[in-house]
Image (cartoon, rainbow, N blue to C red; front, side, top):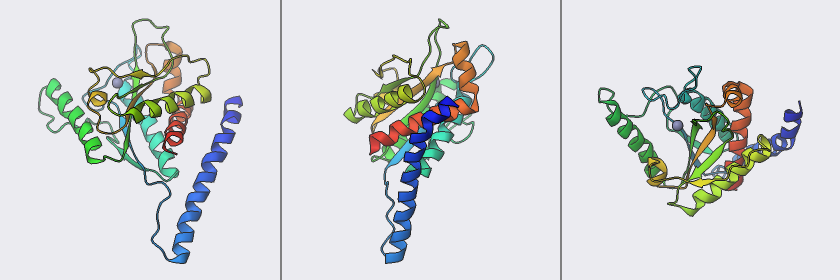
Length: 233
Ligand SMILES: [Zn+2]
């Protein structure tokens, strides 16, 4: 209940944006000019892994790819509700590789290069990749955002999303945003402002239970969406 109460101002804020957006369309129709959406920005939401590539897995068999997709679909819905164009790199349990008959390493390479191509095809977009973390010690927990060094806007976007997650759902989280290393292909080669959100640790028992919970996924999606919109404004 307390958690719900904390979200009320944000729901009101998003509701007002929806009403303004709706009013904008109606007004354009009435005066007969071309309808221009309020938000022309495109956000690419990248649900990490998929299909042959499960990503990290938890002790109970939960695989990262499934939760990544569930959170991504919620972010997609919230952004669209607010008038943004959203491109999903995948919308089901599949990879994006060209040839499924290839060896795993080749499929992985093809999968990542296709995700990168979506950035290249949408130079005005921002790119938000959703992943989950895993660590050798089970104590590690909390979300953390990584940014591409290619565009300085990536840093600002990462900051906005990390701040939103901490203020909305993880007040105890002291993690700071980090520049992605060269081993992170999509951030290293990013063609637009790009971040990876590691939403939490599959290796932490409590966090795993939360990440599997639909309500918590909605809260996480909301916090990420709020951070993206706050940056785009
Ligand atoms: Zn991952």
